[in-house]
Amino acid sequence: MQTVLITGGSSGIGFEISKYFAKAGYQILWVSLLEEELQSAKVVLQKDYPDSLIETLVLDLSKENAAQETYDWVQSKQWRVDVLINNAGIGTYGFANEQSLEKEVAMIQLNVLSVFKLTRLFLKDMLERDAGTIINISSNTSFQPVPKMSAYAATKSFVKHYTESLVEEMKALKSKVKIMTVCPAAIKNTPFKNAAKMQKVKTFEGLASTTKEEVAKDVWNGFQKGKSFVASGAKLRRLMWLTPIFPHSLVQFLLRDELSEKE
Ligand SMILES: NC(=O)c1ccc[n+]([C@@H]2O[C@H](COP(=O)([O-])OP(=O)(O)OC[C@H]3O[C@@H](n4cnc5c(N)ncnc54)[C@H](OP(=O)(O)O)[C@@H]3O)[C@@H](O)[C@H]2O)c1
Image (cartoon, rainbow, N blue to C red; front, side, top):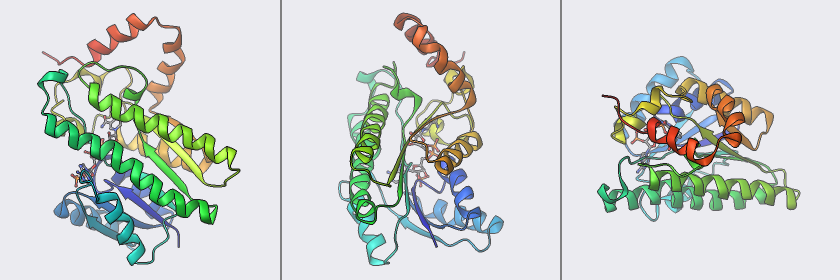
């Protein structure tokens, strides 16, 4: 049986992606923050896929040692992770100088360092087996500077650049390990926007917005095709054809509007 480890698998796009893996008969390992949510999500998924094996670990991935704890948990159970999906992440919204320094440091730890460390830990085993897939969830905010999401966009740029570099390294090493970067557009229907205090922000209904269902489908299709990069959301993919011909000032004007709040 194949095994997928999905951080933040108990809600949002992580949960939607889990449905595809459950349907395909994978054992699912979830690592998330909230015990209650992990347990209720497990009940919901097993209702639709009664044979699915789901194991859970309650862990704060913004803590320094969390990636190692995750890896040690997997090792202690003698599971082999065939697919790692680094999905857990949070956002902050507003002018940089108005943000809580503590919260943004925790976000960097979660969105960057845990992704980096988990990738390093599991990539080593995958390279030894010359098999496996790592999928890192970045964002369309990684494409350019994003006013009012400066630190979040920078974390997602790290994820995109790092992951895309690994794709090239796998080619250089002639490795069969697959690496995929996913950049979803703003997603209307996950808890992310509430957690980031972005309930009124236009982008979730804006030019490129998408849904958790569409993102999960794009991730699954990209994984099936062995893609290295997925821009998620049909509207985003259409816009991406146009943005290279837009002047930087126009892109920033549109972004300022997208990132502003509805009246
Ligand atoms: N929503 C968007 O517009 C959007 C757009 C592009 C990219 N993304 C990215 O997509 C990913 C998933 O987001 P989503 O939209 O599906 O939102 P979500 O439902 O809020 O998912 C975030 C997941 O991360 C987990 N998590 C948060 N803090 C954690 C911590 N300290 N330790 C362990 N787990 C933690 C959450 O677990 P608990 O529920 O247990 O707290 C939750 O399962 C994120 O990386 C996000 O940056 C989102």
